[in-house]
Amino acid sequence: MSTQTAVLFLAATVAVLLAAGFLVRALTGTDRGARSLKRRFGPEYDRTLERHHGDSESAHRDLRERLDGYGGIRPLPLEPAVREHYTAQWTTLQERFVDAPRQSLVDADELLTRAAETEGFPDAGRREEQLAALSVHHPRHVEGMRAIRRARRSPSASTEELREALVHARALFEDLMATGRSNGTGAVRPRSGRHRRRLLDPKGSGA
Image (cartoon, rainbow, N blue to C red):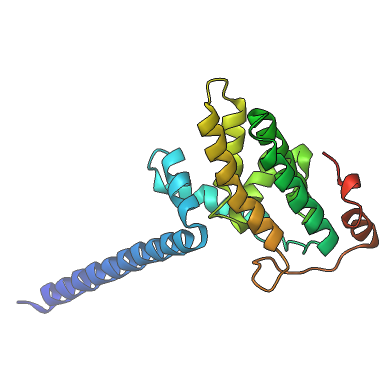
């Protein structure tokens, strides 16, 4: 083998090894990113993948956009009086379910929306944004809000389907009520005086 042939062979070998190294790093980097998203979003990861018809690239982009847009929200803890007020409202709407199941879901949707807004998530006028933000901070139970919205909009939903949606939504409600407690997932950020006054006046937080 001539010197020139040996040099060309060596250069080709190095090029192949470098290309393989780049490929491995790219693949493992993508895999790590997917694993990280799966850990962060849990069942919400699978639901997002399904909504994108199995297109993992689109699903990952969707989830990363949510993280970028809403991951910085630091949910406010609820004042005890506000938590008690919301809990009493939830108990009441559950008790009314037998007589007015569909209205109970409407009330549950409004209560979840109001509680999320009180904690610093996007307000009731931006419900889709609020839902996206909740999917980042409560990914294991945010489907409960979607469930009651689907059920309340469906004219063919049976009473049992309405009941199941309400039960599903309760997990998200309990998550929201736990924010700021020792076992809650939300962090604390300073409150403005205006926000503190709104928290202490549940009736003034809107429907």
